[in-house]
Length: 154
Figure 1 (spheres, rainbow, N blue to C red):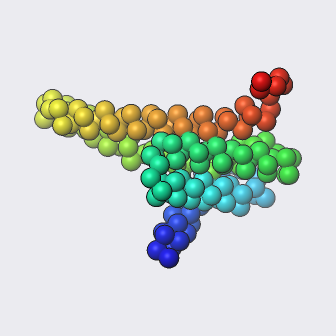
Figure 2: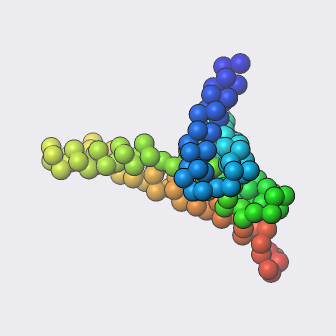
């Protein structure tokens, strides 16, 4: 029961930035609820995958692919570009905390001097942030690579 409540809480809180960025990106009013739903579904999928032991990078990749696939479906249904639904929905999964921790470690190295602990913290957070952003980009591109190919895959 606590997993379901935590999942619902995660999904509800993910809807807020997805909706906010959809407003910033001037998404049509009829598509706003789909951006919020996509953000909730993507973040919820990542939450569940991480709960089941998958790393945050792979969880983000799978969740971004899911959001991209749903966005392609909605784009066919509502005759809009898939990015209308997907870009704002992926914003809640941007790795701001890891990038912030990496920058703080860089400032600490500059202020206190080099130490292996700070260097390791900085490298760990930079790599996590880079791989999460790459997972978002590749996951978002996957449905386009699969559905809009002009040549057969094999």
